Image (cartoon, rainbow, N blue to C red; front, top):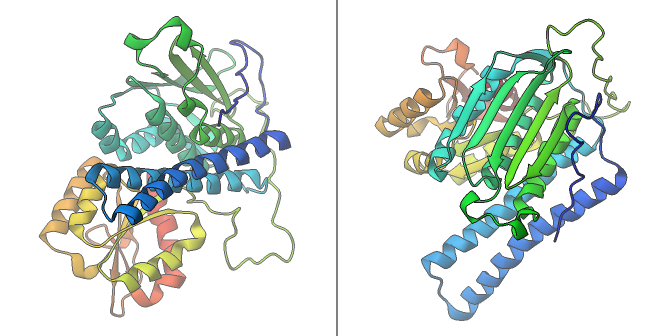
Length: 385
């Protein structure tokens, strides 16, 4: 279905505050979510019907089936993150964040993905410090990369600097949304669907929730998105602080984290175990955290999975340690020195964070997964923020 994104403010317009979407805009987002899930699933269902009728499927058909299911899954996960933003009850922290190292960390995690797609990411990043919620900022930068990688027909240019007085941090993302050698006047006015997809909605709404102003311009086959951060450290006195967030309702269950209090929501975890029951136990232990979870049976499968893009952390059972694991770990640490590994042991063992072990890997006993794994993940996956 066609999507409609409000036109960005004119260049130079005075926009001092980012405004959230109206009820009508949220209704449009929900409609778009349904379409982006239903479309790929309908294509997958058609291929399944053909498989049932003919009893066979070729390699191309199997690849298309997998891609359709993956697209629907990704849309569903983006829907979960949008629902969290739509709640209006997020409790945001305010901490000093160095944007350049944070963005480089995100790019390091995405480097295999960009290389696999043959996309160059060019960056000019000046040291800039802002006040914002760390986990939501991390989610915003990842959402930005998801959208740009899905939309670009060129390299992606990222520039981080300060605006002229009054100084505000500014991140500019620029790419061609059409192949420039195929651009013609008739098509140049039509925007590709990927530009206004659910991935864009997630960028837009995450930015607005942070109080970051997203200004987007699409012209002559080029898209330029500017994210302007209102609270730059070093600003002159008088900078408007973030609005206080609504506290949880009285009587709410404080033992189980709710939909609106998932600091790691959208982070990607890879679980490696040949045992189905252990994989299920690990999934159950983190189900409430809003993580994107993938499962593989072996270290070889984990290495193959990581070729297409790195997760933010890897949980593996102790019996898989060996030469193949050591090689994979060395490769990942070369790319991301703070990459998180969590080893699960069958026997009795004290829960240890990576900062307490000689090899820098966290460890946890299987019998403590339900109680301790969420806290271990919160610490380990937050190291890159």
